[in-house]
Length: 271
Image (tube, rainbow, N blue to C red; front, side):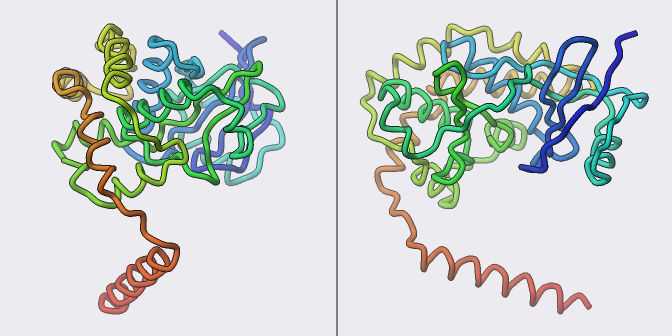
């Protein structure tokens, strides 16, 4: 039996990732109990694996099983509780010490074609979590590497038959993506050709049954097939984004204030 030990942790992001040592291998593991939604693990697996297969710089994901017998060092109590709730299958990556994040200042030094591919892939994955303060890009061996697909909404839309492009809040997130740019149809077609040559069904089949049952697996496969037929809605999204006017900071603050007031009234009404 392999020796599995949690040797460190990070109090950042929803998943509070931990550093796990399995025999001589060390992984950064994103705890499933701390991730942002029902399809977070699936999105992380699919986004990173598909990215690899079409030539994008994404990290190679691994399914990591945390047993109840996992060993701890001196771990913060809240992280220990999160680990206990995450016993079973989680997602991890080979651990890289002192990894560097890419900031806005470094974007000018990155190849424009690479940035375009990342932006188009964000649309494909319906990734709304790339912002000026959270680029989710890492510098690994001098290459900008995409990270974090756990907030992507592709599988939410597929599983529940939603049309998220009808939601202006989603379009606002895409339009505010710091990599947003006008992209010619030929450039989109080049990416789609690579995507549609990838073995996407096998990516879904590699998801453990603990994460997804057979019925839901077939739903996701069918949804992927439909997305492939309509170009993953990338061109449709780009057309919609041309008409999106970003809200100002004042408008955003007013919206947040009104939502908070509605919530407070709802809470008071239920007391």
